[in-house]
Amino acid sequence: MVTRFAPSPTGRLHVGHAWSALLAHDMVRGRGGAFRLRIEDIDGTRSRPEHVAGIVEDLRWLGIAWDGDIVFQSARLDRYEAALEQLRALDLLYPCFCTRADIAASAMAPHGPEGPLYPGTCKALAEADRTRRIAGGEPHAWRIDMARSAVRAGPLTWQALPFPWEDGAAMDRVRANPIQAGDVVLARKDAPASYHLSCTLDDAAMGVTHVLRGDDLIGPTDIHRLIQALLDLPSPIYLHHPLLTGPDGRRLAKRDGSIALADLRAEGADPRRLADDLRHARFPIGISLGRA
Ligand code: GLU
Image 1 (tube, rainbow, N blue to C red):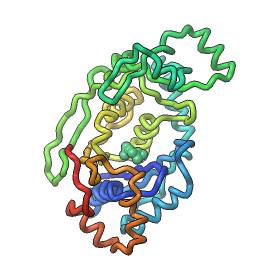
Image 2 (image 1 turned 60 degrees about the vertical axis):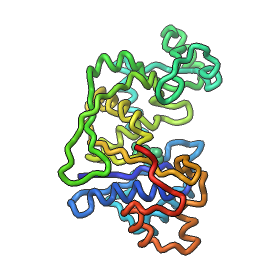
Image 3 (image 1 turned 120 degrees about the vertical axis):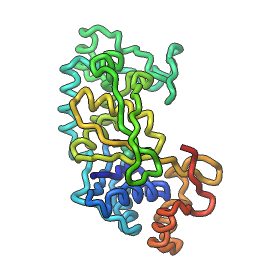
């Protein structure tokens, strides 16, 4: 068994991250498995080196040890580019020159479960236009042609374990419906790969067998399953846990400084006790388990 924790270094860790990391860590400890740490640091606008150091410090404070070296996405850009090349060769990607404002202004923008879908403006561009605009240095993202990709991949399912998980729990097969996400971005204008691509490639490269993460990522799992099929990658088992919510009922976010591990530490919290409480789903006052 191999699990992982894959934070983005855009802030310090909060209690929700700690709980998620402990779940993934505990799943393999005592079962001869490995728990890996991956830093998802290719979001150049929001990732900060000081947050990487902060995350490492927070995890150590909490007593969470990981196996092997930390994997940094910023060191794997050539892998992402190779995968993009493979998908381009299959004619499954197209360059998109739209700005956020262009997309928002499109009266036609259809909606999916995760928000507005890309209206497909750049899908219709002639090849000559694409070549000219790229040659002219116009910033562009690369989007997946979802309809074409879904046809190529055929019907897909992913394996899910229920949460909370117990030894011997029966696996579910979930039908993947990536089409409803629309033509998502696989390489961003400002980053050489999107979360969907880098996460899927890295989980495969790190030999991750069980992906344990928040249930806000159930929808993206359909996209990840599709990418696995297109690139011939193994598909791990997924467990999605409910997100923790704050006193206002909203999910915890890095903006809620009060539940940052660094703050609890500064207040003199005992990390062993905190870890033990989280393991038993005893959360700090005001924090509770959201509905799955
Ligand atoms: N970097 C992502 C996050 O912090 C990881 C998501 C995942 O576990 O796949 O939300």
